[in-house]
Structures are given as C-alpha cells and as structure tokens.
Length: 117
Image: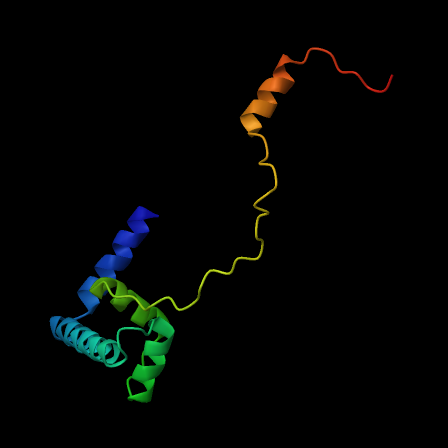
C-alpha cells in the first residue's frame, strides 16, 4: 500500500505544474480571508454549516468539509448554543447506592450459596 501511495504522489507531483500549485495556494489563502471575514461579521458564533451557507450566498462555491478543515487550520470554532438537557433529577433524600467494588468484595467472601430453605 505504501509503494502505491508513493507512485500516486509522484504521478501527481510530476503532472501538476508549479503555476497551478501557486494558483491553488493563493485561492486557498483568499478563501481563508473570506472565511475569517464571514466569521467575524457574524459575531464569531457561526460554525461550519452556517459559514458554508454564508460563503455560498456571497457567491463562493465551497463545501462544508473544506470550511471545517480551514476553520481547524485557523483554530476557530462556532459557539455551542445547545444547553445540556438533564432528563433525570436525583432524589436528594434517597440513600446512595453501595460501591460496586464493595459488593464484589462481599460476593468473593461468600463461600456458600443458600437458595430457599
């Protein structure tokens, strides 16, 4: 598998010209600038899905995965707006359950099992 990847890398490295790589890098840097502008314009709250829609609305065709990757490179993340939902509230007056290690220790000490009478 490793030699296959080396051959694929060598093929693309030889077939792609320097001019194309320069254009690709400059387009990527331009996209990073646009991403930062959209992020700061929206109070640094939007995550990758919303920023993707913002960039598409402004005429930049980009995928969510690309926006996510660029956000990671820029070390930015959207604000988490969802609060943790607590579905079970413990009874304050209930007795705490015994520690499982204590129960297992008690079971190890038992040498005889009594069932019925």
